Image 1 (cartoon, helix red, strand yellow):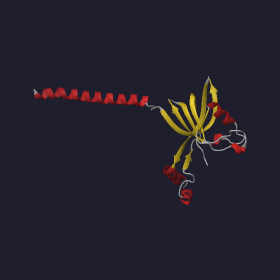
Image 2: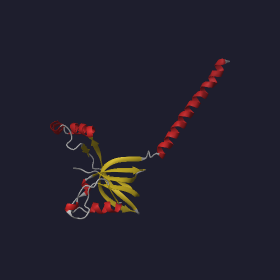
Image 3: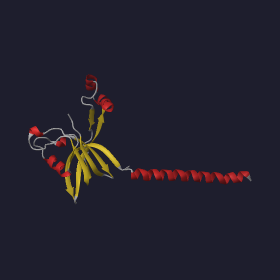
Length: 175
């Protein structure tokens, strides 16, 4: 009789354990979704902006951005002679852009934009670094088409998306 009782207990225990695992993973999944698990950060060169059906789109060429020790390691792997001569990356960062695939993303109306350097006035002497200066999307697009003194498409941008929509664009200054 004792064997029969334990035979019924084990399936119940197993079901209870699976139930707890399922509940725990469901709660974690919900928490991840609420905390922005669909958020993605990447670095890219911006190629252009366009509007289609009332939506602003940004087309970009994603790249790999390395800093510090990681940059030195990738630099040494890809350019061993230069790395040996210099002892590391010249400016503390290293960009890898082996693909020329362009991807288009919608841009949220409320997306934030932070610039480090751009043409403020049309006068060369007024082009100066202003760290993380907040500007509007409209001003970014106007600056993007203004290449007279400074072509801001030559700078990489750190981009954040939420559910595939761009919510933040931060220009990376390059010395």
